Image 1 (cartoon, helix red, strand yellow):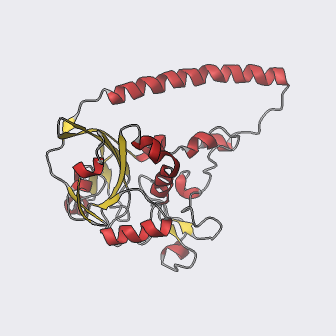
Image 2 (cartoon, rainbow, N blue to C red):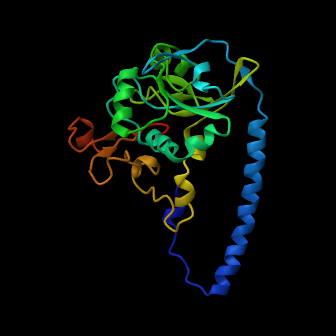
Image 3 (cartoon, rainbow, N blue to C red):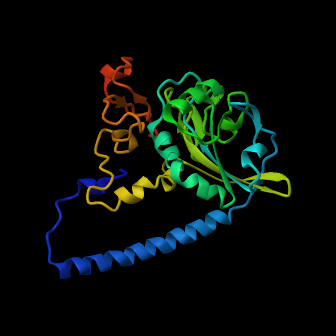
Length: 275
């Protein structure tokens, strides 16, 4: 599970000297982890590139937007694949938590030659309603009328749904009817006028973009994901819904207390793959 440490045995109470010795021992492991993270980051940057041959055109709030235009004059582009399909009225808490992190760092990304955009398969009018409700100001476009989501394996095709099997996170997985659109993150670069795909990650790979975990993992209680899912749905809510009740399905979708849909009396429902 993601957070077994939060259910560990009670801590020992020791002297300052004993604590210092234990902390120095942990520091050795932390330095090993830092070195490993640096090596993995270097290997990630060294991945080969794949040229994007399709001319993707998205629906934006002011009209059509091409993939090239999402770069906004910069050479690199980070795209968040937001887990939101057509007609989806309950949005994903994990995706919401991830994009909430942009509020303070987007200006820094943009001044470091990296543009940021969000893509979802929901129609643009549905996206705009959620965006206004959540007071988000990052670029968000719809892939409702192109194959972008399917090409980058964050949505299942009709054939995959019919077979009950689909490709996600670099493997064949079972298709849960309640999770046809999934989450992910992709990186692109523009070089000599051509666009290349350099990196994509899915599932728990997206945790590297959840800065909040760095804080929680440093505390005695850790992530405290001790509910039925042992992951984000146990505790995350839309940032404007804390303290207002409601529930989150295993699919990661939040239901307000007053929505009254069929999900509430059924209680928590596990979903293959989590969020």
